[in-house]
Image (cartoon, rainbow, N blue to C red; front, side, top):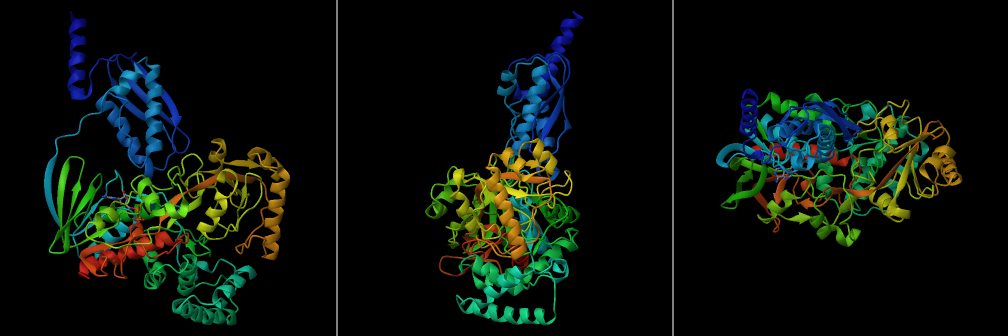
Length: 633
Ligand code: ADP
């Protein structure tokens, strides 16, 4: 009798906890079990504890994923498994590989308990609570909590505004947090440690002596000619740079399509914006480098991996100013509210609440680009790139162009939508930037599947990508050596050690070039010739493929190789803005109450964005948008 009643009690208890989540009883062999599966960076091990009828606990034993990006998955999924007594839990958006790893590891562990896995998978997760409606008011409403939105929100609050930030994903960060994090700024103090070489001098001379495209280029060339003469007169030995040279490279590198006023704003404001982030606690490495497609050694990088340094800094600031800035995650803006021709608010959907936000001073669109929206990118970029539907992307899944679609309903003008940037640096499996073994432009080169160099690896992103598409299987290998990884524990930009990447077979390492060639399946003689050609270029500064960025020879084992393919990276087009980050309509007029910053905007980078200019752009214009909205500009 006692045994029967305790069984009944257990069932009642289980049903009570599970609510509507369960349908049929599932039995387990009581105990604690572990299972493993691949996470984002190496294996995830999960431990489950079960009694005869329930999952009592799910614990993460070990994992190596980046906490700022995947942390929520590690928190939410184990909880959802226990709450719902199910393996049919939702993935955490933006952390899908980690989510999959956790669920698969938990599945492997539960399988050891003898549970009916199919039945566990088919149980529904705990249903969401009933929806309610709510209205809220702030001075400024920012849509999107990536780098641009957070910079805008913080600036608006620093200028006295009460701010609400809406983020549709479960965490802040957008593409910013998963970026390689390079931030371009002419910065004489930090660039002092980068030596100038003859090839650099030639590149400067060529830039200032070519026939100018227009008055803007002519004016920049005149200014830089004087700056370079002063530089030479002072017999400087560190790299030459200036905001004007940055402008010139940005304008020329985007085929003169970018708006000169926006380019001036970008390059003249970038160092101040970086120092502003640093004043809030951002730490950057002393080392200045050239990022892929950046064309010049002016890239700064935070000490934290990927773009986590920027978002961490901003979120800490917001956390310390909760009375002024409210950040709502899992809250998707769906519609702009317009009254008498002015944008006065936003409608949004939270997990259980439908919101109407009123913005007394302005709404800032900072929703990022549309690189993860296959239909939109095909619609706009198809003419240039052909069928892109099968292409992967480096973007997070929320980069779907929502801000563009919302702004179109208020007649916002879209510019440069056809300019979509591929990077030749995507992971062959996931399309993401993770696993990229390059540490900068100067100390690596590329070979195709035949082991041959095929492009100026210091060139523009569009040129490198187009060249890669023309290679067998559009696959290339990045080749570098011990200079990039002095020890096996040194990490790439994506928080992965070269040792881990080799273990995961996402990179290869060998003590000779021939051995490396064998490992990656390219003809050893070709790879050897490619290394020799590269090293000769370091000596002479000259190159068959036109490369001008050189620093150090690839001559010190271990030698490393990592495979890469082209994937969609950045959408240069978007909302037309002026230098005050006000959104312009199709008749060329400012749309009152509407501001925009970051990848959602267009017209800055032209046809091709320089590597390292996005972080500069989103912060410079994010700050301007925040200040403009408060000032009612
Ligand atoms: P940027 O570099 O311009 O800041 P990011 O991609 O880093 O762009 O950030 C854009 C953010 O906007 C992302 O976190 C994305 O999830 C968010 N976002 C996009 N659409 C919406 C929307 N409809 N509502 C709320 N947030 C959105």
